[in-house]
Image (cartoon, rainbow, N blue to C red; front, side):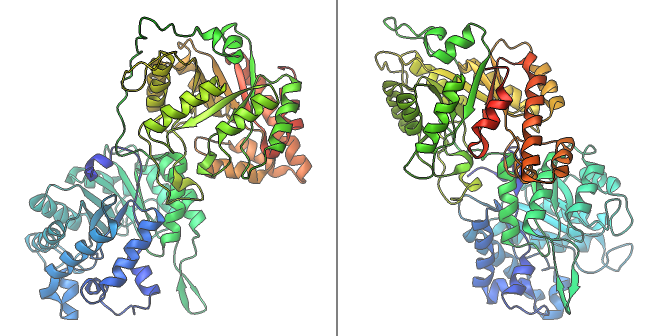
Amino acid sequence: MRSFRDRLTQGTVVFDGGMGTMLYAKGVYINTCYDELNLSQAHLVRQVHEEYVRAGAEVVETNTFGASSYKLEPFGLKDRLRDIHLAGARIAREAAGPDRFVAGAVGPLGVPIEPLGRISFDEARADFATRIAALVEGGVDAIILETFLYTSEIEQAIRAAREVCQLPVIAQVVIADERSLATGMPVEEAIDQLTSFGADVVGFNCAVGPKEMLEALERVVGRTPKPISLMPNAGVPRMVDGRTLYLTSPEYLAEYAKRFIQTGARVVGGCCGTTPEHIRAVRRAVSALEPATPHKRVQVEATRPEAPPTVKPFARADKSRLAARLERGAFVTMCELVSPRGISAARELERARQLFHAGVDAINIPHGPRASSRMSALALALLIQREVGIESLLHYTCRDRNVIGMQSDLLGAWALGIRNILAVTGDPPKLGNYPNATAVYDVDAIGLTNLLSRLNHGLDLAGNPVGAPTGFHVGVGVNPGAINLDEELKRLDYKLEAGAEMVITQPIFDIEIFERFHARIAHLKVPLIAGLWPLVSLRNAEFLNNEVPGAHVPESIMKRLRAAQTKEEGLAVGGAVAKEMLQQLRPHIQGVQTAVPFGKVDMVLEILDGVL
């Protein structure tokens, strides 16, 4: 298994939510020592961990937050301190399994330390060290110090962790609002101190809801080279009919989780009031922004293969009608049709005929978009080519098959007449209706492009001749609005080096984002196809912003959609926006790919009027 320190460098990490919240919901009274449940009711603690794992948490925290010797003493449990921590770590380790991480939770002592109280720094550090040593013995992957009011106390906890182990340390303090800690210390100063103390991850948790935490993040995001973690409560608790309730919905927290990541946070989770449903929503939001990174991939060298002497690779113009038009410098049009959920493709075929007769060059067919189970994209591509006569651009993803199955599929696709392939990594299963399905990801889109290039040179993945070469016209995707554009462009360079011949963007709604992106790739001599997604309603735009990786509908367009009073007005606004966008993009692109939302072919043809 990877180390947690390595995992921190590979995208956003999702922690679990509230432990106390869940134990209380299972009938444990609030005057109980929750940490002691590791010994007396381990099954309850394990159930909570398992619920968070099923919800998609990548890290579970041990049920040891409050188990300082000073907090255990009133319960007569001071001498069980080591046992409680050791049991807590082992329970979490068992529930997490081999594919999840365990963070050893350590909270404040619960008594003032010098100069405010009688406990010296040395005594505080000794208590922290005993707790952390037991957690390490129990098999945790990291130490999380959380809900600290005083930076002087968390400093002693960090020093204790460094004395006891070499594990990564996450250090989180409590804020009163977006400007300051509960002690009055400015959040900027707190982050500076946590960084100087040597924590591996710094951040905030508890006390406030997502809105205040985002505003605090915006104040500190540029001040530290360390990853930043945010774990808000499910809002501020409210009294409702004599009960204390947290009212923040899972959807609300997930929306803010996206904003956390876009602003710069790299660790997200929940604190008091959050449940597995909150974490499930957060997991989906994170997956939408960052498709899952596989733990292991088959290595495919990013070099152009040399064809055997008897094999002559296809010239680009000979690969397909679409490739030939691009080679001549023509402006091409493609429309996206999604495979049906059942066995009949009658509606899709009729829409393809309409588009073909209107002059569209190719039908773009996604492969299980948003990890959905539909008719095979390959089957629909073949039906459309055979019964309509228009070429298809088949999406092929790395999610569903290993490299053996991929090569078999692609050789078969070529034999059956498929000529255009879009190589994509593919949405992770957690994004769709089958979140527990297994993803393969032997390679990503870069490796798949290399694989296609090898087949185009008459070679399999291992370099063995396969006879006559394929002649796939290979396209790849790019996200102009990527959070880390440098990384996105680096991956694009690798794809082009591997043999990609055209580039198709994610749907574009913001011309300024596109222009910044285009300026960075102006030196690349490859056809650029812009993606368009005609909006049909405000709800449609909200869905794109919240659920579709890489999509960003700016506020100016959202405002126009909010002003629409009827369904028809919403459609008109969406069509107008798409047509305006196409006009602005036209000088910079060699083609357009547009979705056909809800099968509205007439709407799409109106948008494409003038380029067909």
